[in-house]
Length: 358
Ligand SMILES: Cc1cc2nc3c(=O)[nH]c(=O)nc-3n(C[C@H](O)[C@H](O)[C@H](O)COP(=O)(O)O)c2cc1C
Image (cartoon, rainbow, N blue to C red; front, side, top):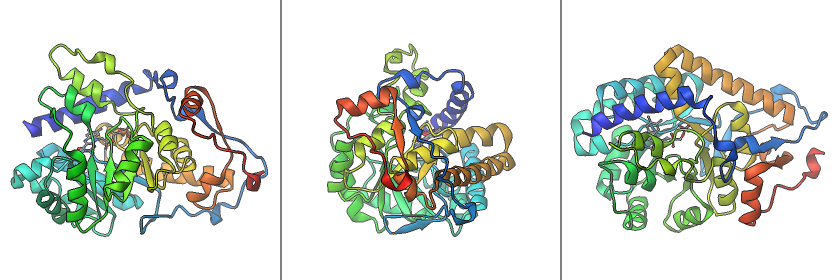
């Protein structure tokens, strides 16, 4: 059952991303989108490209680049091959990588070899294991152990579960379960959404539960309400379209909540990466866009895409005079549209003009 579901998710997510360019209503939705975040252009701000470093440090780690392949696959033969290719692409470009949910492995250890290629192909890389908040502390340790993982992601996905015909219906035990897992594993825990965003309130709660890093994983890209609704006989949850916090709204809501933030969800190109870093993310992840390239065009095309994204991110930082990803947070930003309305209503102070970059 689980294996079939994961293969379905891959097929439906790729189909969604193929039409996404023609079907973007996100801009008008509450909370806006990355297109509401603008860098104010200063014609004398540019620096020497050789002085730009992509290294990013947070939570005691230093990553060579502020980009990662976020959680997607594993559990079936086909998704094991995808994991292998994603890990090769991550190795060739220096990216961190997460596996998809390891629930199938925790239920049936026979599918371990659909996850282990991630570590085998990326032996020195930053690898994240992924579980849901129903896992026991002992299962969490097994997931980390299988991959010799550097961190453990726990995904929160109430909307997906409720719309999923065979999904879970009980979530009130999650805070206690997260606290127990953070105590039990000997690597830092990252909590992520799956495309509906983490609010500032949620991130504060997670800090109290012992979580090290929050990945806001907001709305704007892969939409699991639509994917699961498409798997329902009557597709009767269509009205949930647009549920959740956009990734930039989640970043603005959650910064100051006391935890390093990662950003993912709806990141389409290197400018979105720069925008997320400017809003305070320490690194930026994508899933659907990289999966779509791999499935449609192959491994070489994915490596090419990742290389181009890093090259163009460096170019954007050169224009903006940001020598590090963290320095992007010192640039002048202009927030417009529905994202600005969100900030007004939530009483989130808008980014102020920066003296240093004038
Ligand atoms: C095919 C597919 C499978 C996914 N499976 C998982 C998963 O097992 N665990 C998880 O935490 N997130 C999973 N996600 C969610 C992604 O990690 C990410 O949060 C979400 O897709 C938003 O990012 P995107 O817009 O770049 O795709 C999956 C995404 C895709 C496209």
